[in-house]
Image (cartoon, rainbow over all chains, first blue to last red):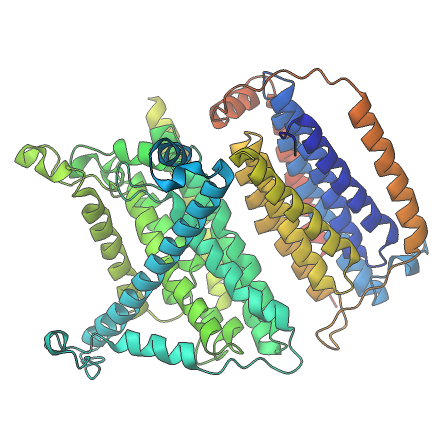
Length: 103
Length: 363
Length: 165
């Protein structure tokens, strides 16, 4: 196989992005959808850091990835609190059943 | 590692023909086996030491029966082969997995915990050149890798299909996560003073004798930092007064209830390997690591490379003795007292230490 | 094959296989374990790309924090009838088609674009540079991120509190 270059990292990132998107699109359980979102964010991070290494002198990509990690952590915490609340109300975390706006 | 691979490739032995990748795999497997063996042997020694030390503190004798039949070794006495006998027994015991338990998770949970602890040994400085991987983020790496143990504990509690294991596992996970915060904050105090996350930089900043050790600088803030760090790492290892998850009188063995034989031995081993890891971690950060306490007295004889592992292991054993001493002296904390200690006592004091040392360094 | 290539393929295959386990498994805990190994492999990829500080941050925050949170979330949001947590999938085939199409589009874009690649320099330690830039150029985003984390902490703790009777 040829030596690993920028393209390999980009293909890996695209593959992980696509798998995360599949999880978000086809899963019923809210927590699994959240896991898919985390995978999408990680794929984007790989992209940022790969470009930071191969096409940039300053560490801009790595700093952006750091902020993505921070924001993803905050988002995951809030999303899980929401999921727990939905479970308390509806006794189930099936996203298809959470379709009423009132109450 | 790169230098080692290049050295082998340049030498004239039969190994120099292999590609870089094959050599890398060989070295990884070799180092992994060496580390696992060293950790296992250390854990056996510390189990024996714990039984003997606890026995003498409680005015009894401890294991005295098992000395081997080999003529010269028999005369050592004091039941020194007790842990060997225990290890053999555990290896040969039947591996019982509950019927409705998740077999795969039941299998990998102890190993996740074990791997997390052993992986942290790869940055521990046993001497100036005796580090497997002298990373630039050494201290941060240890903090990051030991956070894997949370997952191992939760999965172990879940995979046993036992309500009390699950409860013990979740309590233990909550405890480990809460005590990671003061543990990490206090590391910041030392890193501020040294200016680097590398273990060897931190140790070499303490060279020159006992008065240069970090625990005696910036008095008393660093001493408070050492105490906070000691307590926080003790709680992370589920030891001493913080061992509610394995409270033998309440939850049988907490998350490890349904484990028998070799898998339980892995849990036990990783607990004692974690104690050793904490001993080396704290001695490298606060007690001067592999530098000698004598400094330039005796003409620098004690600073020679041969003495360095001796010093750090002595200091690690001293800290382990302190941990065992605490375990057999203090009663267990309740779970709400545990959480109170972490969030309302250790974390604020850690912040105060950081501010204090920061301001002191500025003026 | 050089050492760098071997490590890349090990971590990449680990990440993809674990992500696959996460997407296609029916047992919720297996999904979480798949995510665990995927995140750990991605941390390995970061090290290969010279981002040492970020790799340790990824392990500490994602594996030690978010994944533990997800596991707690799974265990607290299921009717405790047994060990197996089954979750089904909806309309896997249209999902696969869309996603495969998107992947092919991304592949074409990756191989067609002429990225402005420079030969990568030596891998220097990044901690000092990250620290300096956060404290000088990126101070405002840093402070806003801290406030965001504080808001998320307060909000999540408030939302998930026990019900008052």
